[in-house]
Length: 218
Length: 246
Ligand code: FES
Image (cartoon, rainbow over all chains, first blue to last red; front, side, top):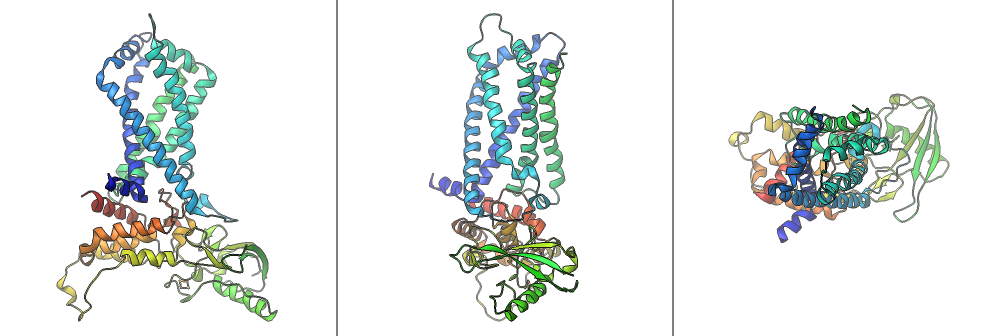
C-alpha cells in the first residue's frame, strides 16, 4: 500500500494511472458500439430489443459495470488532481503567449472536453441505463426509448456535440497514454497514430451516426 | 532597424514588476537579441538609469544562461536557437517586441528578466550523474557502445539546461530537461548501475521543487533551442516503470 501511495504521489505515476484507466475505458467503447449497431438492422428494432433484454441478465456484464464505474471515478479524480497540481505549478503570467504555435488545442483542453463528456455520460446513463434497468415494465422496448430520445433535436444535437468532444479528447488522450507508457518512439508512433485514429475518429463517428439516423427520421 | 520594446522590469524577488517601454533605434539586422538589449542598456547607463538585468554568458548557444520569453515564445520565434543566437533580422522593422522572464512557480523572478533556476541544479544533484572513482582515464574502446546509442545519448546530452521547456509548458513541467539527462545516462553502459535509483530520485526532486506534471502537449520540444525530442520523455517514463514495477 505504501508503495502504491508513493507511486500515486509521483507525477509520472499519476500520469501512468490516468493513461491506463483511459485505455480501459475506451476499450469498453468498442463493445458498446457493436451492441448498439444492431439498431441499424432492418427489423423495427427487434434484434436490438433482444440484446438489451439479455444484457442485464449476464453476470459478467454486471461485474464489468461496477468495474467501469470505479475506473471512471479513478480516471476523473486523478486527472482533476493532476490538473490542480499543474495549476499551482504553472505560475504563467505572460502578457503575450503564443500557445497555438507550440501545442495542439486538444492537448490543452483535456479537462474541459473530459468534463463535458462526463456530463453527457451522466445524462446518458439516466436516459438509457437507468430506464432499462429500473423503469422497464411490460412491453418495454429499448429501441423505442432510443428512438424517442435521439430524435428529439435538443438531445440529439447534444449527443453529436458530446461525440465530437469525445473524439477531441481521444485525439490527444490516446497517443498521450502511449507516450506515458514510454512506447512512443520512431518505430511505434505510426502504429499508435493509426490505431488512435480508430478511437478518436471512427468510433465517435459511428456513435454519432445514431442520433443522425433518428434526427433525420429514417 | 527600429523597434519598440515592452520589457518586464522588477526590482527584486519581492517587489511587484511591470512592463516599461523602450525604443531601440538604428539596430543592425545582424545584431543578436542580446546585443540589441546591450544597446538599450548603453543608452540607459548614459542617462544614469538602472540598466535592464538579463542572464547571459557564452553568447554562442552553449551555456544555457540566456533565456527570454520573446513575443510569446521561449527564445523567440526562431526554432532551434537560443536568445543569444537570435538575430534581429527575424523581427519586423518598426514592430513591437514584448520581452518577459521565464514564468513558472519553480523559477521565481529575481530581477527584471533574471529568474532563479537553481531548481534545475537540485534535480541534477538528486541523480543526474554516475558515481565513479576518478582514476586514470580508461582505455576508450574497452566498453563497446553501439553507434545508434552513442548518437542518441549525444543528442540528449545537448541539453544546456536553459529552462525554455519549463517556460513554455503550460504546466511548468521539467520533464524534457530531466528526461534528457536520464535518457543520456540510460543509453550508456556507465549509467546502468544507478539507473533505478536515479529516475526515482530525480522525479521525486522534480515534484518537490514544484514543477508541474507533464501532460504531453509537446510544447517543450517546439521551443527547445537544442531540439531535444520528447522521445526522451518516453524513455524516461520507461525507466520509471522499470524502476517501480520490475
Ligand atoms: S548566453 Fe550562453 S547560451 Fe545564450
